[in-house]
Figure (cartoon, rainbow, N blue to C red):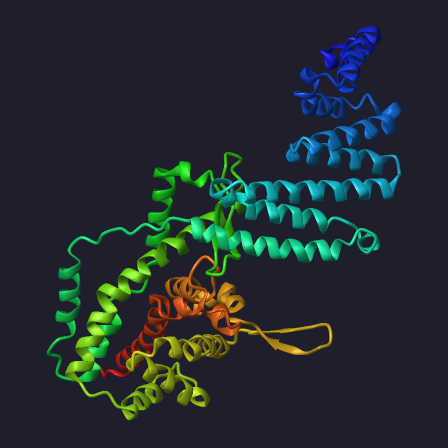
Length: 451
């Protein structure tokens, strides 16, 4: 109606509508307070209060305080933030910053309310505490000491950690029964039983679980997302064992944002792969490994000769890699992974360098730094040198926060007992063994003479 009056240049009707909205906005009657956000938003959108923006800002502040007292913290956030915007337009920076502070305090109070209400709402308090932290960080540096922002942020971090721990406590775990599990285990054992040599048995072990087919995984995930699109409308938050949020996948929604879709798609591919990882270890790798160690004598010298013959093993790291493999054959995977993860990175870096790929970056002080595994695998050249399949697997196992993230967990001392004794380190060790064995197979084929 207001826009129509403007287009008709009907000043009397414009003023009439403005008066109706302003009277409602300044009224303390409950019927108006119930729709105060809608009225304030409409006034702000129509922008007819610019003649008296200071009065508008003061009223917004008053409404924010009123809703805060009534513990309607989300409404108070809205009014405090809009009031801060109007005070800033009025060039009253100090008042605008104070209102941003009140908005942050409203976020924090809302999170406290959710946390204290019980396990139902406690599950979402972590994200609300995160909103509070981001809100406090909007306070300019020159005002932080005045409002003790740093100490408030520190206290919020403790609350966030506690909320994360409680979130894990109230999450439910589900287990999917595996049909014909005994048959699968028996088949894995049968594949390696009775081999004439240890080398032959290890070749079979390296092929029990196929290298993931990246293109096939993409097609499967596209089909899954198309079939179960409703699940993609919601974002996914991943927690670590100590309750920290370590990864988030955005909701796809209906706006056809290509970047959001690609990010969510990649995250879901990695999550799907890691759900299969535990299955592959328990149904294939472990059973076959048991048979091999019962039927064959494995010596350190054999491992050394295997690594020494491999074209992908850097000679300067051969003893470290041999030690990593030996520990796995001793079932000390929780220890082996501390050698496996960095040695896999070394192998990837060496392979890229052999193909004239720059694996370093030069900082502003002209210091040459080696890129980490995550950066190396994200390079376009990595797919060309290693192949899409292996690059994806290494990301899913070693570098992605949506996967096992073993390189990061090991490098920063974040791997807990639970994680160390899970299937992920076993699979990571097996990936290293497979890479070496497959490099030997490839070398043998290249050296074959035509009949």
